[in-house]
Length: 294
Image (cartoon, rainbow, N blue to C red):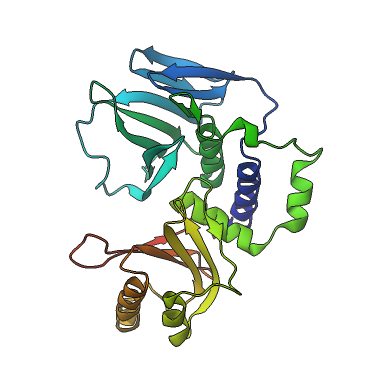
């Protein structure tokens, strides 16, 4: 399962590197207020109102909901949310939310800006029985078509001419680092996580990790180069409460060395994310997230 996920993540990263998704099938454009989006032409419109456009894929596995939503409940704080984080799309702030329900999975962008009526734009792709990596790749593909006030999420001018076999070269050059950056993008960005050159990278956090015997596999900057993700091999299991005597002082030392800004660790052997949040909080908040797959 994990090998399949890695291959799909690699394909997604290659698509993001092209700037906008290449596609052979026909797509149709839609608009809702200041927002525009696209979907495959064979997706059926299931609802269309002044503040809502809903579509469904021919096989019934996906529904795409676009709506101008008047906030009547919080976006966060629910038990079924497994990942979330801020990002920028077409120059606008937005919140990414990944929700897992008993029968459905929601991947969603909620834009921060409100219109004159106080409504926010929600862009939601609901999957039923779809593999996570496939769902994520499709969501990225649809998200690349978003337009806000005439500004595209991914500028079309940045798209190079596709190769005859666009995956052949990528497969030949694919590395384990590509997999790690791909899943970092899934959790923390919209394709903007960029790895640093470890040979020349110098930062106080490096000394904190090396002093504790933690092997550093990569460092990537996400969310407009403001959020570091440290790929590491940890000496102990972060899940076990008995290891808190090692991890809690370590998290605190890393937070201080990072200038008291939030960050994430990614344990590469077991595909575990550890989010460390303390900015503007009375104490550190730690969240562990295991990447699905085996």
